[in-house]
Length: 275
Length: 267
Image (cartoon, helix red, strand yellow):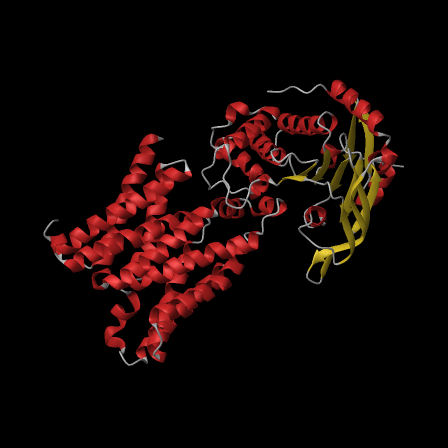
């Protein structure tokens, strides 16, 4: 399994940013401009203005039904805004990693066969994957640390292994934006940490822009640069270091919330007293 | 067996069963994987209602059955699109209504209820060679189209969210699959009857899924199981004077039981 050194990854990211320019001159890949998002006549997210810049890690956090998936679909171009606009840069290539629960395990596929589907958008209408496609996909499986699981049945893998297969599939079409929907759901602490470190590596070393949907604020608190919190119709958005304050979160969630640093990690603790 | 194959109608019945069985078994793998077994049953009843309507109005039964089935496809495909909320109740309504209409149409037609079973359900022992070759052509074209667009159909069924995010028109490919399925069911039903078509759609596919972990292997086993069941069922029907369709369906079930035992033994 590939081990990712956080300090080495950070050094690579800083170097790339120095070459490519500061955060303020980073390219805007997707821009929401006063966009209302919803289905039919039902508006779920109102008046959203947000820019996804290259190299960013944008986290969208909120409970079920808050509009996270709606925002994601609008970002990907699957859902048109009810009003306002969602502009995507011509160069944007998405690699989408769905929620594991929506991947149908009744189908008898191996890890390689599933990851190979990531190459389908690159193939012609009647074309089938070639040996070159298989080799490219094996490299992706190796990159995420599971080349040895290529011929194993997907449904027999652990949650963390399945997540890596889905990430490898997303990488197969050489995206520049990796979009992950609840990638650490139903995982133990070790697997959760491993997946998040993999995502960090893909961003800092491989230069991918990351968009991640989660309902776990504690998971994203140490990785996101930009944060959108959706809660009970309210929305807080901004740089993570600004959004992640005890005052902000207490107001957003309506309960006392403490944000603290523990052993070099940001932690969010609900309850307790907050002045 | 050679005596059985000596008569032309038995040879035609055998070829009919082999072709209809192979096509239904092939599509049946996806009917089972997509969890739309009930839709397959409902489509067979809609096709039956189409035959009844044609007899009532003096239209061509095969064409009417085909048109109605493809029309039913559009309605059912919308229902199964939203996986989170299974619309089984609506498909059930379609099944019940189509079954009732089939009987009512024929009851009011010139042939009357006396010929209800034969007219509605088809019987592979009464297939004319001309009907067979037309049906064979349709089934082969449907299977070829499915094979041609295999990756689009598979991706859209297996992971519609990612397929859509990857630029595939999932709604189109769903309808495409249902149209192919509807055409095969409509054509097969005219020759083999609703019971046998439903058995061909479901049992061989499950047999293949039990015995193989790879899609090509599953297809091969499903088609093989349909073939063996057809030959065995026809033979039993001929020698023991049993109804043909149910005999083939029973043989198909026996093969499924054998597959189940083998799969348990492997575990």
